[in-house]
Each structure stands twice: as structure tokens, then as C-alpha cells.
Length: 351
Image (cartoon, rainbow, N blue to C red; front, top):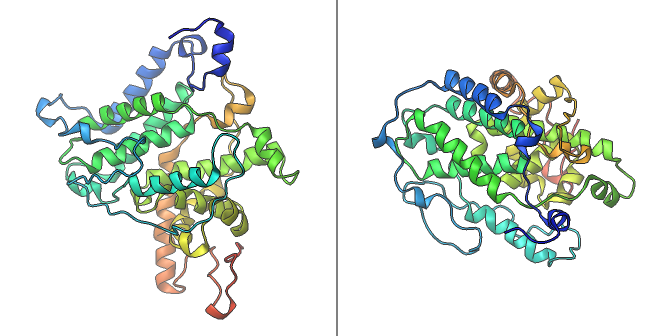
């Protein structure tokens, strides 16, 4: 509903959206190009009314109900509680109690379940199809200037929806994917803190440019990791903390996430080949979008040659596995935790 004082209402609005009609020369042409790319990669078959997924209403539990005990019969995923006593790393909040906010965030990891084996319920689908779909959704996000949070929320919707279904055919993947993105775009309303606020709380230790560079490296790693279906083995908090560990330090990871080394060790080791590929390719130049402020440009989900990077990461994973079988039982480039008598609370340092 439109209110008086359009400028004031616009300033108060927290809706993240890009005015495509104003900022894009020809959005229909852009989307048609993307659609052709997706059809070429995923294949095209006639619409099958009998293939419509069953029980679409059981897609996602409402986030307004914290203690939702519903069980999805087709999902084999079990609740996985990791370090429930993690202390809150949140600063003092003016709008809520930080302990309550942290508790809600931890509860969401238990409420919104995922299943890394959901493709077993869909014999006609392959992990590569999921990677192609997510790669396409990244491209859509870049065209319409959608935020990274919107993309990851859409990916989460897609994975959890597929875990409640059976025998989905590949011709429905694009519909499910774009519908997930549509829902995520409407739900993602909260702006993140501004860049200068992040720099301010470091007390001069990090400049805005340094934060942007590090964030781009971490976001590239997360973009690459989500293409691999094995990432569903780990909760989102573990994935984010592991990415931060690879590109910062154990101390910083513990401070901002509340995790200890033992909580993220398996994920850090799984992420090694992805981190190696990101380091080899180097940082990307920050893209600028018309109608998007420079200080917000790093929040826009961008698209790059993600599938090629995924293939390289898988090749490195195979190479590391072969090396480990021949010599060391641990991934190359990753230090082992110290022996029991020499352990420190901060965990191992990166080389």
C-alpha cells in the first residue's frame, strides 16, 4: 500500500529489489539468452502433467514457528546438533537481545533439515544437473541484481523441497529452481550492515577494501562449494566457518562463529580442494551495476565460470585422494591438529 511522502517511505523500506525496467536495457532479451543456455545444458522434453511433484504444500516449515516438530516422511535427514553450547559471537544489539537472536539462529539449523542423499529418491537425476541449475540461478541473480542471500536461500529451498519429493524428472528442475528463487526474492528483505560499520567494529584493524577483498574470496569459495552435492552433509554455519578458516585464521573463525576446531575439522578438510582452486584463480574484480551503490555492489550475487572451477576442484580432490593413499592420510596443504598433549584451545594454525 502506498503511503504519503514517497521519499520517506522508500527510505524506510527494507525490500531488496532492483528496478529492472530502469536499469536493464532489455531484460526480456537477457532472460531469453539465459533460458536458451539452460535448455542447451539441461535438455528439453515435452511437459508432462503426470510428473508434477506431489505434496508441494509440505515444502518448507514456516520460520515464524520455532519449535516445529513436523517430520517429512520422504526425507531421511536427521537433526544434527553441533556444539549446542556455542557462545554468542553477536555484538550488543539495539533492536533485540543478542542471546535470543543467537538461539533462534542455532534452532534454525535443527529446524530446517537437509538431506545429502536426496538424489537417491530421484533416479533420473544426476548431481551434475543440480550444479547446472544452481549455476544458471547465479546468472539470473546477476542479471536482476539479486543479493547473495537470495541465491543461497533459493538453493536451500530447492534442496529441502527435493528431499520431500520422489522421482522428479529433469524437465521440472528449472521450474522448481526458478520458483525457489522467486520465493526467496520476496522473502529476503533485511539489509546487511554497511561496509563502514564492519570496518568500524574492527577498531582500525581492517579497512573497507580489505574486508571487500576477503569477502569476495570467501563468497567465491561458497559459490563453488554449493555446486557440489556433498556440501549438504554440513550445516550452513559449518560451511561458512570453514570458508572463513581457510582464508583467515582459527582465532577469527572461533570469535565470529562460536565453533571450535573439532566442530569444523571434517568440513575444512572436505573444502581443501575448493580452496586450492580459488587461490589458484585469484580474486575477481568487483563488478559495478547501474542503480546499485558502490558500497552495496559486493552484496550482489554474480556469475562466473563456476562449472569449470567445480571440475577443477573435483580433479584436485581425486589427485589429493590418490596422494593420500600413497603417502599421507591427510589432505595436502592442511596442517593436522596437534597431538592430544599439545592441543591448544584455538586450534591449529594454517600454513
